[in-house]
Length: 370
Image (cartoon, rainbow, N blue to C red; front, top):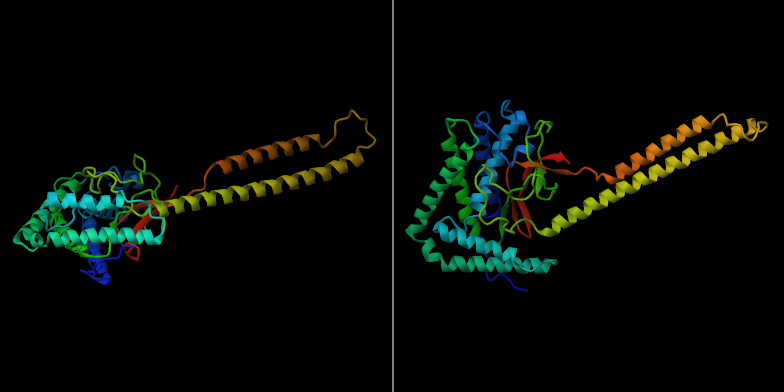
């Protein structure tokens, strides 16, 4: 199995956790300050937000702001550029190559194969950085980083203003500048690691997975959702910007987790259907036993009647039979309907994971039953 040629660490786990926490704090501050300035909710998030949220701004609109900014950063920075010190076109192409190494790799069913893939990508990344070291140590790297920072500030401002009221809220530019600068600082260190530090935004509609999600509370219940359908696949960026040019990067969490979630859901549905069938069978047996007892009583009393006479209890028996048929129909309908699942309503920040080792920061998510 391939081994890492060398081990490099730019920042330790605690420092990454601290930097992402500072980024989360800056996003939360700006989202709170602009919570009353939203004109509309972005289309990708509208089905997870109540229609009257913008007219009656509460914690829900603060969470909307956090979600929009966080997803935008993942789509437009962490998933788009290889290193902020490189020329943007080259940085984008290198990021596509890095993601394609994972996307088009052979399936990795075993832990050894997963570790081998991580080693392969890490070796490529470190070798690429070695080849670019002269460029990254030149004055052009600082210029490229400053240019990218200014460009992302302008783009995030524009993405937010697509959904905010005119004129721009006071403090918007200062808040956006701080957020982008903090994110650029993190993105500068990520490719320097021999380990794979993965930043992910959890999309609405995904199944809850507490291994990398933490459930938040305090939002008003979703009683009057906006128009649209919640789509757990990536779409438009968090601020309402353009769709990612690369489409599905293939850099999302391993498909084995999705398969295990689907298997668990199917098993839960089968168990619920089996339990409902058992309960229905017990009810039928009890009803049949009760009818036999009543039939024996009436048979003793009516023994002297003529054979063609209508039994006194025939109306009661017919009513019981009708109720039994209705219960059977209701039981069958319940079996056909899958049990409700707890899914992500929307995510307020990002998850940060060292692939194959540990989760540095769990994604804060709000839940719903569907």
